[in-house]
Image (cartoon, rainbow, N blue to C red; front, side, top):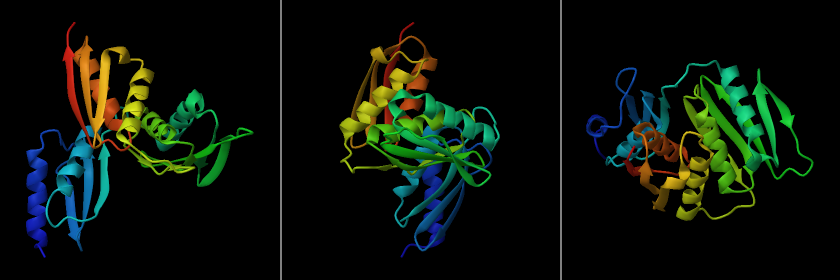
Length: 240
């Protein structure tokens, strides 16, 4: 069995070697017990969070990863404000119109919408800026869309997407591609028509042409937000 200190040193080296991992409140805190690595701290963006987890998972001696990494919020918000914005985003999304929406307020679950022929239920809970989505929805597309809408709330520090898919359906790279395309089409700051998306083994490749570097970055972030995406390769060209 690898020595815990050696494993932790190897994880630290792996994190330092990944340029996109940018801690914002001091180094990422690590601890190891029985092969379970706990990672705590805050990073600059969603790419840094996912890449940090991916880098740590490759280190020999690391089994389970307990993910307590969060993303620096674009706009600091209280939990109630975040909850309300996530709620409103889900209520306004036509693709989720057949879902019952419930929120936790002061520990009590309140129903805010209950369609007569609901095909799913989404429960929203926010604690310390971390959004948790629980319940069941009718497909991977709804699960992924709900998660991205929660990430788009600028106060969100993390999104734990615990939504189940009922009835069960097989996931696939094509389903991931469809979800990324759907998200890009819904982002008002991105021209999805100029972007091509391919997915292989949970790695998303973006290609095409966008007019601004900011739009290139936004499109990449949108892809990272999609549940099940392990990596994003951004091949978008910027041509004003």
